[in-house]
Length: 83
Image (tube, rainbow, N blue to C red; front, side, top):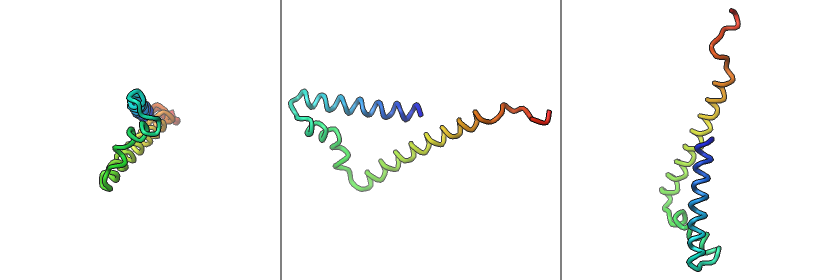
């Protein structure tokens, strides 16, 4: 979950910096926001598919890792109940 949080934080900070720099150059908020998301608007269908696939794989790997760590914490540390 830390990796996902850090990724989202970094993306939002970079997009915020981009919007801030556009506004300092004299663009209004709508134009600055459009410039920040423009690379996603000019993508071809295969690029959109691959980008979506990478995001989905990242999310599923993060969830799988979280569930695996959670299950390993719930199991006893190798001691048998019979003894």
